[in-house]
Image (cartoon, rainbow, N blue to C red):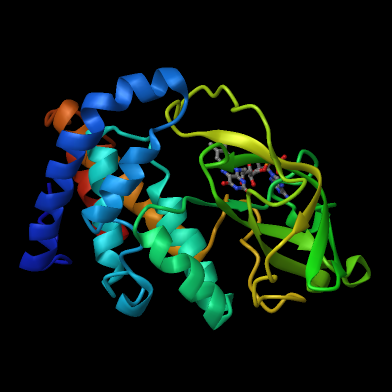
Length: 290
Ligand SMILES: Cc1cc2nc3c(=O)[nH]c(=O)nc-3n(C[C@H](O)[C@H](O)[C@H](O)COP(=O)(O)OP(=O)(O)OC[C@H]3O[C@@H](n4cnc5c(N)ncnc54)[C@H](O)[C@@H]3O)c2cc1C
C-alpha cells in the first residue's frame, strides 16, 4: 500500500483516539443496533464528549476549528471498522456546514454547540417520494405566515430521520421561480405537525436510521435558515447530497473500505492483464487518485 503524506503526526494521534473510541463504544454494540435499526442516542453524547462531532466548526460554536482531514479520519476509521450505523458525517459534514454558511448568528449559537455536544441530532431533508436526483421536482412548499413558515409536503429516505431533533429542509418558497424560489428551512422536530415515519428496512446500512419525515403539514416554530431564494447551492444531481464537504466524506469512506479490502483480500501478485501485473494497474489507479 502506498504511504500517504497527507496526515501529520497530530492527525495520526487523532486517528488513534477515533480508533479506540470505535473499538470501545461502537463495535461492541453494532450488531444490536443493526437489529434495532438505529444507534442509541447515548452514543451521540459520548461522541460529543470525546470531541468527535462537528470537528470543523469554529471553537466559538462548540467545534474544534479542525481541518477537514480530521473529518476524513473519522470517516475512514468508521469504514475500516465496518461500522456504518452512526450518521455522524451527515450531521457534522453536511448539516453543520449548511448552518454555518447560511444560518443567522442566532441560529448558529442556538444549534451548533449542542450539535457538537451530541445533544441535538441533525438531518437534512431534500428527497421526496417523487423527487430524488432531480431536486427541482420537489413539491414541498413553505408559505410564510407571520414569524412562521407553514410547510406542506413529505420527505423520504432521511438519514438520522428517526433520531433527529433538527432538520434542514428544502422547500419551495416561491414555486414560480423554480430552483431560484427554493429555500432551506430549519425545522425542530418537536414542531407542531411534524411527523416522523416508520424506519425504512434497508438492504445495507442497517444500523443507520433512515425514515420518511414531515408527512404533510408542519408549522415551523423557528426562523428559516438564512438561505432563501436560491442563494445556496443545491446538491449536484446524481450525487446524493453532493456538497463539496460530502464528496470528501464519500471519498474517505471509499479509501477506508479500500484499505480494509486490501487487508482482507491481498491482491495476487502473479496475475497479469495485457502483460501488465494487476497489482501495477492498482498502483497506477491509486497514483491517479492521489
Ligand atoms: C441510505 C440512504 C440515505 C439517504 N439519506 C438521505 C438524506 O439524509 N436526505 C435526503 O434528502 N435524501 C437522502 N437519500 C436519498 C438520496 O439522496 C436519493 O436516493 C438520491 O438523490 C437519488 O434519488 P432517487 O432514489 O429518487 O433516484 P432517482 O433520482 O429516481 O434515480 C434513479 C437512477 O437514475 C439515475 N438518474 C437519475 N437522473 C438521471 C439523469 N438525468 N441521467 C442519467 N441518469 C439519471 C440515477 O443516477 C439513479 O441511478 C438517501 C438515500 C439512501 C439510499
